[in-house]
Image 1 (cartoon, one colour):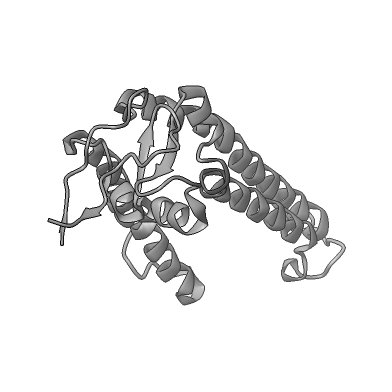
Image 2 (tube, rainbow, N blue to C red):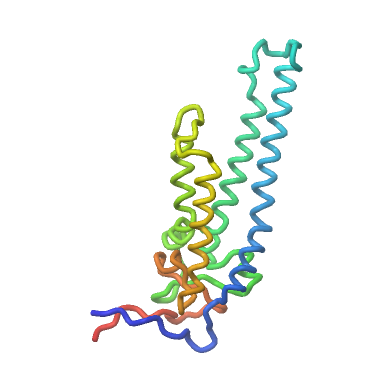
Length: 209
């Protein structure tokens, strides 16, 4: 049993070029970016209002005797921010799992499909494809959040953020040296990005000699 190399796509279907994928990503950033930014702004503004209203100005007596008792509006702001971050984070994997494309990929006229057999990508493959570029960031963030008092367990945040960003770029850039234009995340998830959906298999599967 051997695995045949990836063949050319079916007639009328071609692998998505990097410039199309980049354009789709840019449009998606225009969709998810404002969501995360608005959530952060709301969180920050409510935190400022919370401290100023409940604690009062320095030297004055606020409604509460100690600022540690404040936190109602800050909690609301944090909840809004978390909802915004979760919405922005789930945007890509959910859209790809259900429709095979995001709004950005729709604008770029490309779609993520399964390599072997027709059908939707599915949540499992979509999640793997989404998590691979973000793996270092997720691990480092979990370690940092797990430390007490927010002490930098992994050194300065810019250090591990830079490493995580470099990995993210490398994963997506891996399409450039792959003849099928499949990045490491595509290969691990068993997906391929094409310019037009096809009901036929676009990738060669296992075949007997």
